[in-house]
Length: 213
Image (cartoon, rainbow, N blue to C red; front, side, top):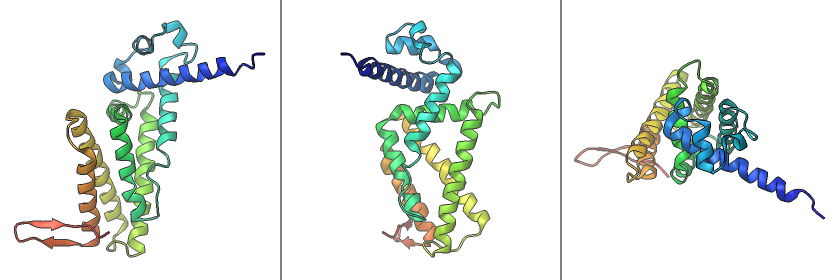
């Protein structure tokens, strides 16, 4: 006797295939340039079959962003203060293994600067929340003595600079996949944390910043 689980599982699998294809298409062509037909072709289904799961492009983008948020919500969390800031490396490692994820995010981050873009509010709020979270972690590190004392203004500027650095390095990696993104980010993150701690060592040739364990 059929219990309906087979068709249900098939539907779930097809929905995920559509989301995976949408991530690739939107990441490559942007939301504006990508089309439902391109996504349907990528999955190997008709456009009519695709819209049974997602009636329009905006609903597909919404589902994709919700999935991205759920996948990334806990990836950087480790321990309060510097522990969670160092946890950013978990996000970087995930992005290296899932190129389409960061390709989509950076494409939308640029495209959604237009207030009329359907992902504008999501992307703007995502940046606001992420910067606020890591600002709080840096202030925690400052108040607990993990790093040198900082004013609120200094901590906010440091986090804004750190986010700009991460996005910039990831763009370089997308343009040159042979680059070692994990090593690049690790180096700059260690150097940044070391500077926060005041750990600067003169090697005789140049000033080298080293992070404490």
